[in-house]
Length: 239
Image 1 (cartoon, helix red, strand yellow):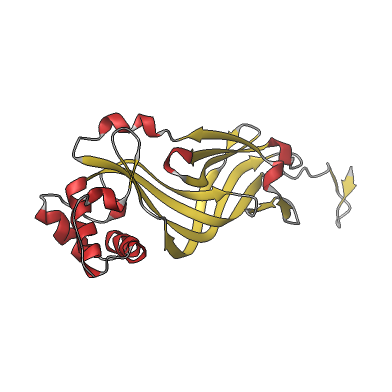
Image 2 (tube, one colour):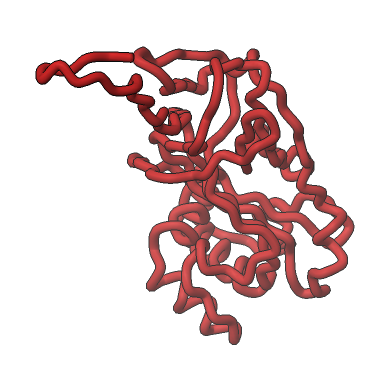
């Protein structure tokens, strides 16, 4: 028994333990990836425009990328001329569309639980990888379309949390799931989820800034890569 200032005795007070929140912060590159079917006629119109301005391959590729990603008005004009509705690469009729952080060796991972933050390395985390197979999409494209991958790259920080966390943090219990795009020539792998001891962490606040664009790639119905010149075979452009 314990005694208070009045001299009265009372049983020891039992304090409720508040649940601990596990917060994981990842910092690195964030990709937004779109895989879609796009009409050849629209893309051919863009290529003709680019080669018409300057017939060097370097300029044409930069121009092609610039029109699709940044010149929405001109892209819509070219699309409309062939009966297609273009509303920007991120609004494309997509087979796949995801914005997520990229798993790589330089990914910064900070764990916040308890009084001091803890930094862990990507090599400490168990991983599962799901390839995004081109063969899954090829049957869906029409004869007058190409399969296309487009996207952007940002840099930022994403926060995940798990409520009612118990015990000491063990990096071996942290696992992440990824998607990869090797079939499309893209080496980056996107993080699609984090779990701790089998429990999914909830994604929360995300800060990202600074944008560069993924080089767009095109593929025919049999999976062969389509180059810009393939869209204007036999045509001659003068500088």
